[in-house]
Image: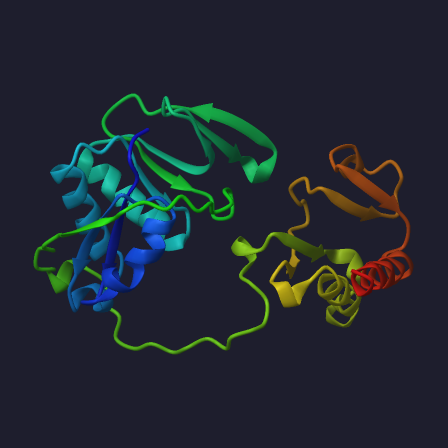
Length: 258
């Protein structure tokens, strides 16, 4: 769809720290929207910066991450630009057609914005990052003053305890357990399986799914007629507490021999 450009919103110096990484992944230009307000106000600085970047360039589309904040940024930006908005994108072709996963993963649809510059919220983890080194120039974006009464402001920050597992949306492999795990104590077998799949290499994360989970590649189930087995790439009919420890041991043994 054209040459990728990155928009960096943060305190002074943020764009300089990120420019090398952004250029290594294909950003031909870096639009730096830096101010002290960027760290104090939520969402609004990002919306302002993206609007400025779009109006100052011939943007073909705007892509943001479909996180909690990203969805709000995308929605507010689409309103300002009087443009179409597509969320939960997992693919995008050169003509601007977006593939989306909807209804909890049960349906795949293809959509295209028909009015204005497309604003697309991409589902985290939908794409593997690929290096495509280029030279990236830096351009300053002057953020407008923010009206405190019209914007949410951060008054305090508290660091969350850091674990040794990636976030759920960043994980390459997700091991999940549902109601059949039988309480918090039962999650030990699930966590041990996640560890065997390579947590030290940040490949796995333990997660809990809803009562009606979306289709996933592999599945344990005691019911051989369970509908989920018809959707999974592979399935095991058996008791989790019997099968999972054997699987964990086998995976650990194969990793031990390389």
